[in-house]
Image (cartoon, rainbow, N blue to C red):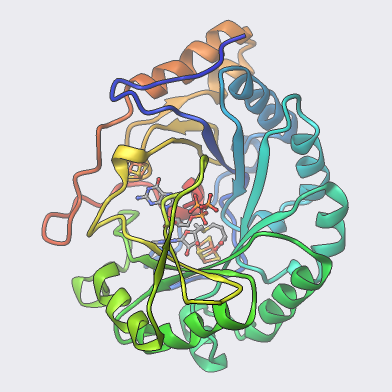
Length: 330
Ligand SMILES: Nc1nc2c(ncn2[C@@H]2O[C@H](COP(=O)(O)OP(=O)(O)OP(=O)(O)O)[C@@H](O)[C@H]2O)c(=O)[nH]1
Ligand SMILES: C[S@@+](CC[C@H](N)C(=O)[O-])C[C@H]1O[C@@H](n2cnc3c(N)ncnc32)[C@H](O)[C@@H]1O
Ligand code: SF4
Ligand code: SF4
């Protein structure tokens, strides 16, 4: 059994993100393309047993963390059983879910029973009408109810992801930050990235993590929290005495590519070495053609070998990647 996978830059690759559907029950402004994409035919989406097989092979190669995402992962039927199967895989990988929270209240008990504990929830406004404008649906109260339900059940950590958009929600940074004074949640502010050919990206919407930090300092000093093993890309802080944390995710202004530890599997079974690059390795075709485990593992190693040193986007030089965020999974 191999113990670890390192790429050409000596980065240890341990974290696999699985997009289990390209479908979503929201149409977030910063994520959905300007015109509807053709949905992947069901037959093109990896079945749960295929996802489990590829996860098992990845864990044998040294991966130890798997995040289930989408589209919206909670709209896929049977997601609770799938999570339970992932959690029971050998070597107890860390299993996490990223969701928009719309179905959390009704699914929370089932998710808890599956063994899932780690939840990242997207929430871009605490104001009802604004939430509706950003996501296309008037569902803030349902998401809030979902967050309160998972908090009461004991899920931990609960991370709230907020993509900050100038003129749309950047005046709510302090309202979000205050949640870290009241709850043990990690409130994470994310820079808007140009993803997908039909993205609504415009420079004017972009707010840098440095600007977010300046606003955050109005509420108090920010104590830096050192990163843990397996941590994601957030720089972490805490207001003195607060039960929760603040995170800044700055893919454009201060990228974290030198620390990158991840691969992504798209809903249709392509392994992406980088979120912001278009290179992909098809695992679905060989898997369905009956490729043996060695062949599939060699393809995973190949994705690690071609991982770019870093992305090449910045605010002034943008090369939006072609695929939309919903089929990559964030
Ligand atoms: N450019 C870039 N952005 C990323 C990467 N990973 C996460 N992000 C951004 O951070 C957002 C939040 O990601 P999550 O799904 O919550 O996962 P995570 O940040 O890895 O979460 P933790 O493991 O809990 O820290 C994503 O939607 C992206 O916007 C990455 O590898 N590269
Ligand atoms: C694609 S969604 C998938 C999971 C789930 N539907 C959700 O919203 O949490 C995963 C993450 O991607 C983030 N995201 C989507 N488009 C983005 C963009 N253009 N720039 C930065 N983050 C983005 C969302 O905020 C969300 O936290
Ligand atoms: S995939 Fe997530 S971020 Fe994208 S539209 Fe759906 S809920 Fe919003
Ligand atoms: S942009 Fe690519 S290389 Fe950089 S952190 Fe994200 S996935 Fe990793």
